[in-house]
Amino acid sequence: MTVPGHPQPIPMSAMPRFAGLATFMRLPYVEEVDDLDIAMIGVPFDVGTTNRPGARHGPRQVRDMSTMIRRVHHVSKIAPFDLCRCADAGDVPINPIDLDVSLRSIEEFFRRVHKAGVATLAVGGDHLVTLPILRAVAAEHSVGMVHFDAHSDTTDTYFGDIGEGGTRFTHGSPFRRAVEEGLLDPKRTVQIGIRGSVHAPDDFDWAFEQGFRIITIEEFQDLGVDAVIEEAWRVAGDGPVYVSFDVDGLDPVYAPGTGTPEVGGLTTLEAQRVLRGLQGLDIVGGDVVEVSPPFDPSGNTALVGATMMFEILCVLADALAE
Ligand code: MN
Ligand code: MN
Image (cartoon, rainbow, N blue to C red; front, top):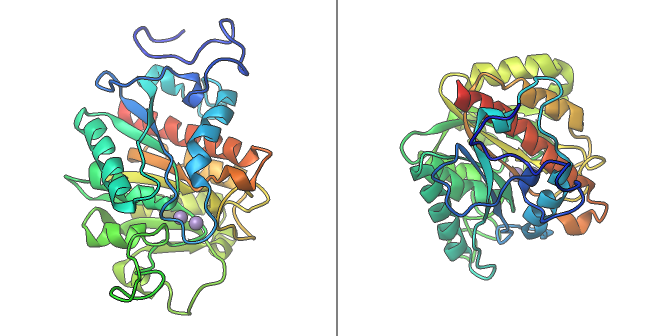
């Protein structure tokens, strides 16, 4: 039933799901990634958070809740651990006092994995982690992106202008920086679920000028899941695609454990169905970010994060196996 040589989740016959050391989806933990196709990596970093922190605790609780995940997708029947050699490659070492050192550490970690020819599926951490990840993943070739979020994350600076104490590196600015650095193709980027009060009416002007396709939650509701999938294919379909999933794209009813919740969001099933609709795209990597366990002692947000991770894993494994 399983493919010889592929790492497999610990079978329930050997250890019940609630027991043993928690790794992503009960896969082996490895330090050497060379023999893998997909490395799952924790990025316990929330130094880029502008408001309520706690996402540094995301990877550990997502690992715990990911022990609920089984082997085969119930709709697509994709068995990612048979299609690809997957494992938990551990956490990036972070210096929680030093943003620059941490960003370099994340980039170096992902660069090492990428150079070994291994795709990455990351768990944050706040959304700034996607910038150093893209510096590694998109080093040779810019990528398109399917991005789930309440926020566009294209704000230029926070806490003032540059030279007045402001900063360009926060979880509200990764995709502005990624476009400036030539990592992200804005014309091949679709942002899904955008909503919430803004700082100023022109907050999205820069993103629109660059060519980002923003699907607000209101447009999502008007279009419906199938038309949103079609639009994601139209925008991002022609080339490599990165999938970035901020759990605050979901309604806080489903994912309260996050630093910047916005009501009126996606349901978990809507997000899952859009992710399934990405099967067939040239997906090159992905992440799930902004799970902040201190705001959700129930652990449900981490379960949601682990489940979205599995949805991304399935379409990523399918793309790599093509
Ligand atoms: Mn975000
Ligand atoms: Mn967000």
